[in-house]
Amino acid sequence: MEATCFAKTVFGGQQVKPDHRDVPCAVFSIPPLSVVGLSEEQALEEANGDILVFISSFNPMKNSISKRQEKTIMKLVVDAETDKVLGASMCGPDAPEIIQGIAIAVKCGATKADFDSTVGIHPSAAEEFVTMRTVTRRLSPTSKPKTNL
Image: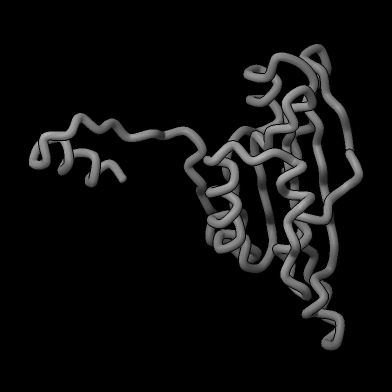
């Protein structure tokens, strides 16, 4: 991204600056971890009010036949007032691939209602991001956020 901005500015005559907001990142461990957007702490600093946290922990359906116990955990951080998805994180198989797609939605300003109205691909772990309906916790700027995932 930065190289493209540089090339457009220097060689293309277009003043382009890189946008470092909502850049997804991943740790390629076993299992992999990936995040995009704001953490709970950052969201509380930037939001004008409360934030909603949605968390899902499950054993992916692809493990049901083999009885493999490999948990996946996902989290969405949402601005309670605007319904905008401020951040997402995932730890589990294919997390970087899934978060890359979620990053587009976060970058475009998708709301939780946008996620809820999206049809998930079944059976897949990714569909969990569009089926999380129950708020795990509501945090206000005066509350202290949890620091796990």
